[in-house]
Length: 245
Ligand SMILES: [Zn+2]
Image (cartoon, rainbow, N blue to C red):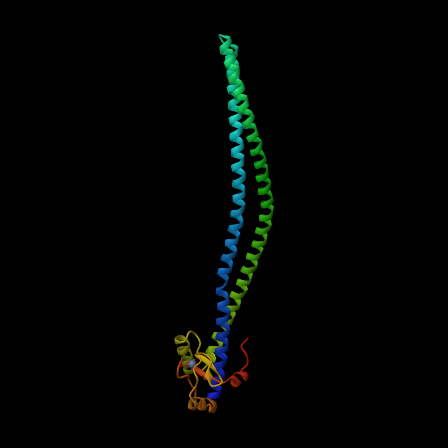
């Protein structure tokens, strides 16, 4: 097998691996994207829960005021009964004054009650308005999640397919050549080849010495970068290689 033929095989395998690496990298972004959507979902629900809480708080305040008014009214009934049983004019007059005083407090309390009723009404409306918005937002988010998951599954299937095709292709390579390739790939972050442009290694960006560049051009043997040890090739050689699909 000539060096040119060996390189043809290697470049093609390199294309498979580059494609695979790119797809795997894309796949790795999906959990984060899904997590971000999930966080958004929680924030939207949290906002709604806060509005619900705000309404319940006003309702509780209103109920408290109602209870206080009821207690004061009960107190008036007691006082009225006491007035009927008064043993002297003075006691009677004093009891009437007390009744007047409690009535005054009831009127104040009723003003406050009215304010809380208005607040409760507003809080309820705000909650209901938000609820409708939030439901729409949640539907939209669920739709986005489903879409991202669908994309993720499609990409996973694509990666599985690519991997199988890459393996099938690798099996056709001469064993020693494949071993060389795999060994370099293992030590160099999965990238065993580097394209040389302007006499510079495309992977580590170190300039090739003229003699090394010369032997690369003559294609007598496989040439590795003196710095990163990757097998070097010139762009024009890659062009004659059918692109992996
Ligand atoms: Zn290099």
